[in-house]
Image 1 (cartoon, helix red, strand yellow):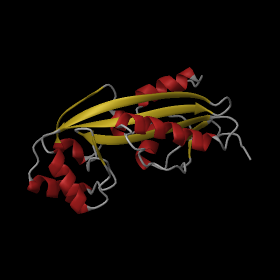
Image 2 (cartoon, one colour):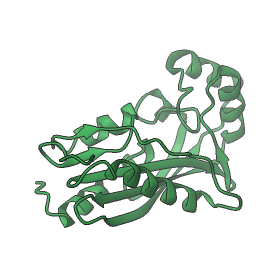
Image 3 (cartoon, one colour):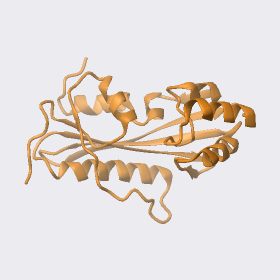
Length: 198
């Protein structure tokens, strides 16, 4: 059974607290719904192909339950030399990951999709953002992990927190893409769908 979307007609297809906080910055009412999809990469799939496909699948998975509304799907992976960096989930893996990225450039690939549930039209895009880590000693890594414990974050750091101190430079068009939801591109997509934003 399909149902009408929320008052604003905006639904974030995500259970991510980080994406929820980012979307709140646009000052529009929205609801969140976690999509049930398989997020494994397909054989031979590049990082860009992966995040673009998953953003689309997340939006579509939620949109099937509604007959109206704008559903936002997003997915992100980080890569070092085209190797995907997974969320560490443990202290030991975070130490290994931060040791690996020390002094290196890491690219964060974010896929974004807005699905109009009324007509099933889709707007999809991909927004990259790169960071270069400063050289990190074992002592710096251990101090950082003890303070922030970023075990649920790709790359083992939180740029919106103390993780910014690990970086030497950043490059990209939209820093919010680094956190997982590129608000500049999303705002344009929502305006294209008729949503009034400042």
